[in-house]
Image (cartoon, rainbow, N blue to C red):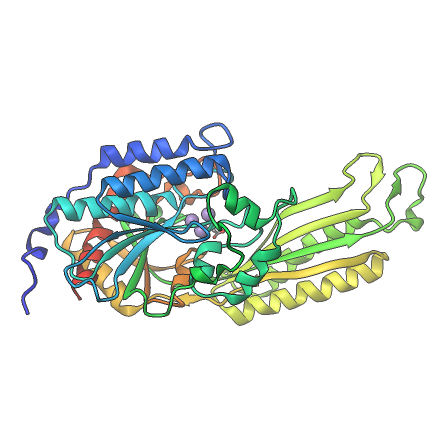
Length: 428
Ligand code: GLV
Ligand code: MN
Ligand code: MN
Ligand code: MN
């Protein structure tokens, strides 16, 4: 069968870089911290405004917009064989505190622009094309990463957990969702689940968040696998007391227990012997937090990842044993040790990586295969759909900080590769 003569003239896939940059800049103003930092937390007022901005752009691109009960947003362009499983693409727009304006955003605004490119080019999709904006890829507010995609992929455990999840102000997930206009009259979030096979392919465009592409002056990263993330919450409790009056032998300092565990995390990660094992204590809180009061409570949140799941699990087990023995030796109570998530890695599908590689070749863009050390909604979309990811270079690999930057030329390359890959997958 001969498909439309679309693929012949693809080197002229024109990206409207100026508009795309304007949209990235405008979206970054929906933030709770001053520029250049961006802070956009799930279901906050700024998040609601940003969502409106995205839905509006989807509408302007002629997509039909649907939202599910947790606010995953879908914009669909119907194909001429609409009964076939669609091809989907997308990412997130929530931003952790004091981060930058490209993480996630490039894969949402870039996806909408990829649709525009295809439309301007006169492309007619066979399979429908769908842009997805996922709810809360970042774990900031409720401690749950990839909340929207995890639920889409059918996590019954999460659907249950969300009924009793609260943020650190004690606002429930459901109340927060209702504030943003979602989860109305609904406790049951299983309506969000999508069946395996709902999409014939899912592909996400994202900044690399690492230095390799820039260092090697390579335009595109074709992701082959996503490393396995895990996160753990730990609480220690001691007696606290006066910083002058309680003598050292009498203390059980919850703060020192936390400090010792933080150093132990680093040690266990390094002991794995692989450069691919990483661990971070990104949250360490002491109570009551006064200079002249011995910490009576401490709270840590630990993030650990590896491309090798077994090796990552060994680190988690060592952290657990260490938390128990630190508590014993210091006479504090280990009042919580909770593994919040312990996800397996995900592999990209050959069919998709091949389509992306040929797109790069046709567009004369250099590319290399690589793994993603950051996690993405793709990690969960891989559970219900063949998955692939496209990386673009970013300045010094900076991410999750205000200095995050990607040049519009690199973004435009990514959008071209995404558009061409989508077209190929749509026709296949
Ligand atoms: C997602 O932002 C991650 O932490 O990898
Ligand atoms: Mn991120
Ligand atoms: Mn991201
Ligand atoms: Mn990420």
